[in-house]
Image 1 (tube, rainbow, N blue to C red):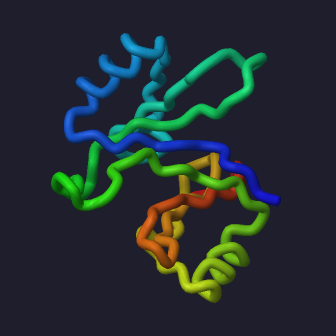
Image 2 (cartoon, rainbow, N blue to C red):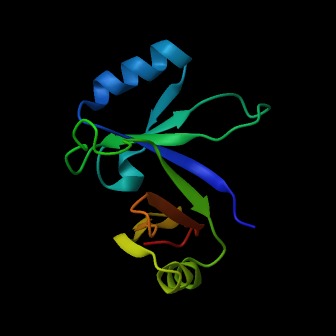
Length: 131
């Protein structure tokens, strides 16, 4: 089985979101912009001895849904062993590419998809050679 290993929060005002999550939950943020080639903050939600996952915070790239237009939520990313094989399985099962495969330089391959219900999720294949 593949597990959810990462979440993302998309925000219109990244600084405001960092302040909110930091003050409410005590989350810590690390600038990962160099890896993502755009403003991107790693989110640490707890110590390594705690159950849970960490995530990311980035600038929203498309307008948020309006009121009563469905959920506006965190995007979960699933760790996979083979990005290309998983992408093919997603499309064969009725999913669609939302954002094609791209390199998180020196870390992984990342991409986003829509399930048949229109929900966004990511897949992530660790690869220190990703370029």
